[in-house]
Image (cartoon, rainbow, N blue to C red):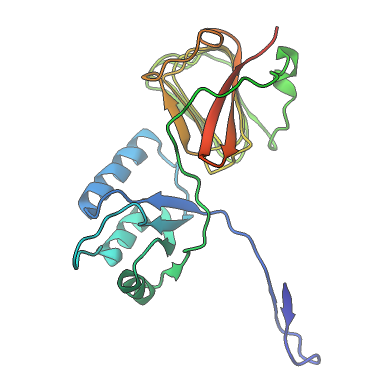
Amino acid sequence: MAIASEDPSNPCYEIKSADLSLVALLLKTTDITEVSRALKQQMAESPGFFDQDPVVIDVSGLTLVDDETIDLARLMGVLREYALIPLAIKGASPALMQLAKGVGLVDASDARIRRSVPLAEPPIPQALPVEQLASQPALAGAMRIDRPLRSGQQVYAKGRDLIVMGMVNAGAEVIADGHIHVYGSLRGKAIAGARGDGDAKIFAMVMEPELISIAGVYRTSENPLSKDVLGKPAQVSLQSGPDGDKLLITPLKI
């Protein structure tokens, strides 16, 4: 859609359709203090993870009884404190929507938000040969780490892929907005598509992660990997279906 100024002699503006990548905050409590505490911990574990990202406040998962509501003004202040920019709200009742509009939030009821679902073991599709591991489409200027990562260390490849040439030990964390390639053992946490890229993938020569995540859909070591991928070359991708998004963990052929 494009709408130009009605006066052809004075084309001082045009209105066009635009897409904007948003972060969704799926609220599970009305306790703003608890939300602030959780965000503070997130920032301590992943400094710089949020970078003035526009956010949709999703309240559809809350069950508000009687006249219970949310202190939206305080919540918005907390979000701004941790480098998030609240723009819209989703799932609000008419009364809450009225309050939201009063503090400058727009109605995002039609926004589609990815939701994590319990992981079921899916059928294994044709896996990529291991020699193709490094030939996946890469974001500009992939970050390369040439040393093993020890427990407590964290690497974040903002706006690009991440390549780790050694081991990611337990307690270490690798994060990328694009793909993650680990040419060694992945025993820590790997978070690909950190800002919502569902096409991102995780590759490892030895897949033994504490946690793997793509675009917010995650799996922890509490849900053990199958024998055909545990401790072996494997890849992780995101599969979307009618029941939600699921992680696919499949072998890499050598």
